[in-house]
Length: 98
Image (cartoon, rainbow, N blue to C red; front, side, top):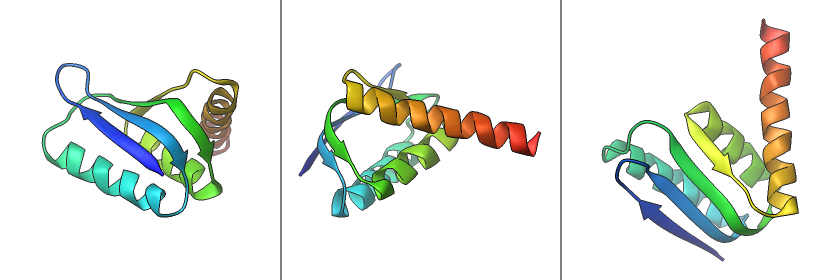
């Protein structure tokens, strides 16, 4: 299960609580698309502080959302590790393409 909480305003964010896996990956993507279509602009923070598990599809989506301007925030070792992998992957892609 995944709880998704939106916060609009000067610092828009999406807070996730639970497991980012299975059908919840698609739900996060739909939520992101609605949130950005409804006027959320600038950098949107994805707060992963209360995420307990991320499957490979979830990691792929997080990486895609970073490409679309998301900023990932993590508090626990697991989520910090996942964020680190995504950031390193982007750096590696930039080196290959550049």
